[in-house]
Length: 445
Image (cartoon, rainbow, N blue to C red; front, side, top):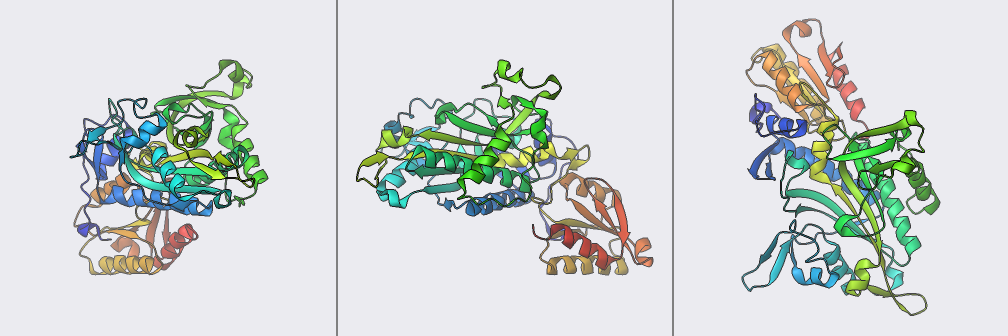
């Protein structure tokens, strides 16, 4: 993409309404624009990153054997009355009536709706296990929306639901999701720590939140510092292997890590003092096992191998797709702007022409652009007739991981400059070598 043809409404000044880094940088980088309190339009750069995150979530859900569906944004209140949650959920639920006077609601979560789908179409244990998921816009009417996409009223979320014959089967689904989420977050350049948490209005006794450590996190967290040394890495896990999934769960949850809602000071004191840590965390996902809570209430049963009707065991699993943008920025930025991890960057690298209109510089930039594009990469070419300082400031603000700088002086020596946004280190290379280096960085991603 040529920047002269792109819609990138960057701001030079910090917006007064932005209280945290991610909100400020998303507004300044032209990623979002507020439409109403806690509701945002996603502009091209923000939308591009949102899709990158969504695609990673889809790929890892498919790897785990989960099946995508799409449910409606509006739901009938009757389903929620069946489960008993319609009145219990609170004022965060946006309630309304349609033109016929029927009670409706804007989806905050979809346990009831997916249970209704299940009970209508699944009747035998032979159809289990089954996990369905969707990525969809949700709405919760926060009393005080703030922090941009971190605590908005409208948000984009992956919500998944497993149906299993037994508690043992459902707990394997729980473990499988934990493994899947660890891989998902690491692909985005994040370390998301699973922490014992409170189930809230979803219900159930078994639940873990995934939190990214950040000074602006809304939750106070307590953890053993050894947990931050754990990495999922590129290990291959057979998701049908119960022992392997259980081993990963034990590895990542055996050390103390809890949110303030479930913090146990007595247990925390058992951690060696030098390893006890208190920090702030940003929730980016949560997994639940809640047994037969919804299947009992809504009659979601199957025939087991003895011919008996039994309620299915269920769990739900969420990832805050839009919230992840804010979390990534909170975890990866400096005083110049965003620093995108390679896995979610909107463009793979930037090309900066130091002398737009110079025939040799223009030709070299176009050749770089064509070569990168031919390799399946997506470069952003700053071809504007702007000062070099303004071009560098824009590239630093929007946070592309790699920048190739082209100028007449370097071209006389047959080189361009390849710069890492994260480290600031630069290297002079022949143009074709710079292309190879960038292509190698993204190989296999």
